[in-house]
Length: 565
Image (cartoon, rainbow, N blue to C red; front, side):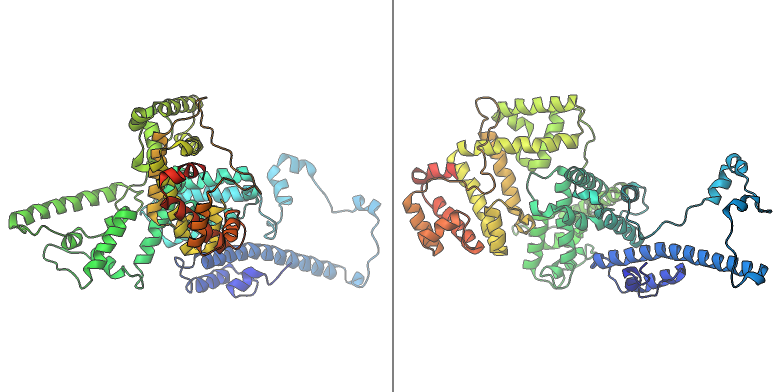
């Protein structure tokens, strides 16, 4: 047994069965940790605290056993002093005839409690590995904590502490290595966290990182619940960053969040920074605008120079702002699940009920406002029929709306891939231009990330500008509306090369010449880059130069190549 294990070293005390001493050591260490900024340190301390408490029970049990054994030995020696040095061996055959020893088994059978007490098992061994039931208990406890009734919208420090402790234990479940269990757990946690925002905010970063959701941020391959948690993570990251004094927009944030009234004046902050903050929030994090003071925002908004403001106009505006303040405060009181103060969390339907409504909600979750069932019915009747058929099949299977939406993702992705080669050339150019802009953004992060993107490997999509995800959704919606499925009525995308193979296509010599010049490489080096050979920087730069060259040429020279890429 390890008497000085890592739990005791973390707490900074010697092994003991004194639970008060353990709690005091834990409290002293906790004061030195910023839970929000260093959650891993807190989790490690919490685990050490729980492990020490468990080991304390075991130590107390061992100590009691030792004390009982010592007492029995002392009593035996005191009652038989003449045999203190040696005792004759007992004859097993004579044991049953010893006077004064009676075992009433009938009493045990009549009184199960007596038998249970007599054979009470020892305290659980804290060094024994957890069972699947132990991990399930943590999952149930976490769900109960998130879904229960709460006095406040946001968790207390104690509730945050408990959430992180349960989550850390769950991540160690060996079943997470099984593909089916991992996928079920991923969907379960995404739905649980999305439904319980903002109370689940302390878990958003840890869960998103564990499942790697940020690497596919903005992609429609993510389920609605995962996409919502990803957007929530991005908003929380910006919310934390902009409140730090070192952030370039911190002064503007302080200005717009300060309480004001009709007689307040602008603060000492650059107008350019205020306008930049407003544009950033309204474009990428619209839910955060609820943190701004309406009067402050009104002071910095541009006004008409023609006639200025008169007293009547100012009174009307003041009344409207007051009504907005009142309405916003009522929403805050009634909506316990606001993702950021004053903004509702997404309403995720449980079951399917109306085909057009259910499909529209799914399309909005995947493509936002770029696609809806009415437009599909008008522009692509074939796709409309396919979606209606898919809804009916899902309804008969009694699928939930979440499963229905998740099933639409591969269906629509397959149709997009099948439609790209036959899309109009202007749309094809927009598609490849988006791929080029994504590669340029990733190259600015790292040539390694850029090379992984071109090779079809995993990369961190959270580093990409938000507008690229918006453009991607818009272009995919345009492809779905502009293209049709194959003759058999199904999408049949061209097979992708398997592992170890390279997709091949013919490139005109003048394209290779111009691209190699643009990349500052020889034609041989460019050819290697196109075949995923050479350094990551060479692959990244060569392929970017190639795409730039192709997109700079007219359709009559590269139209066929655009359809082949």
